[in-house]
Length: 407
Image (cartoon, rainbow, N blue to C red; front, side):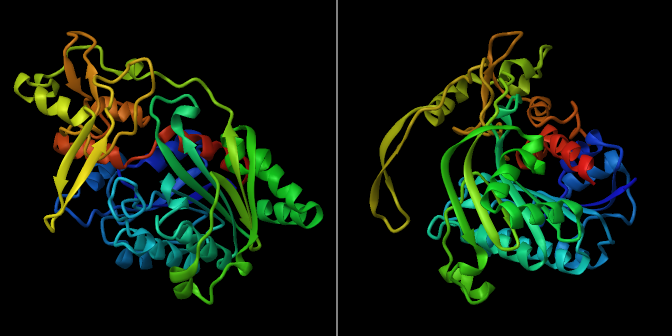
């Protein structure tokens, strides 16, 4: 296949496209959708078009409406919104939340277009979401892909495990239809060798295992069948289904195999290596009058707080390093980066030794974007937001290389 016609959903500022095009010239993005419903200004879309141009194939519209214009394609990619699966959102609603329900838009496109390959990304917690019904959401996703005729690989990848500068854990979902050679080869192997073939594919032979080598596993595994799970239909699965899955797995022809794998780790890049070395604008440095707020946010706490109904409870949390250690990879950057809070990063400036927040360029580096990628006219706060929502581009590049080799 000379050209791999690619459709990019929930495109953000173009992380999937950057990674795929860096992996191979064969990937050609022919249609893209990006729309942020919570804001009037579409900064991410404007950033995307600043780099990749405008035209009818770059659509800024609710995917529920735009999906009717999706052209035929070979590969569907997307980091579908994660807020309803995220541990950072209290009482996350999972696949039934307003963001989580966007899965059904993907499902509609799969039903109508049947692309041979699908690559999706989400937070690690999607495998166990929601908290009160562990595994329900991913069970629904697997069931949908099974009914559309796909085999599925999944894997939780921590970028720092493979040499990058951020401890960012994300679930990658790689699916290929029963019309592809890799599906047929795997199906034949499973018919002949059973569980042994599934294990071999998951540990070494699969697309994700090729991209992210594995050194071993804990010995814990799940071997199950979709048709043996308790449900009558998709509506029923929402109220009854529970399943525990490990950090890697595969599903083909309704059989699910999941194992707790151990990555073949590469020493991570220290946070200090990505910091800007020159003069930093004063805007990023902590003011003396704000230092107490930062120390409180980062410090350990045990205090009585009140609920909305007036009742009291003991709130406690541990301290966060302040400033960040520069000889280790960073913690995960979030959309709230640079705002006063325990999750924002505070570093010691290389030139002055003063404490400051990360700059937008440093956040771009942590995600593997070129310097200044989001410097397209959006406010600084929006640049942080876009990077907090982005993926680590080199991870996509690794998967793209493995995928291009088999197509």
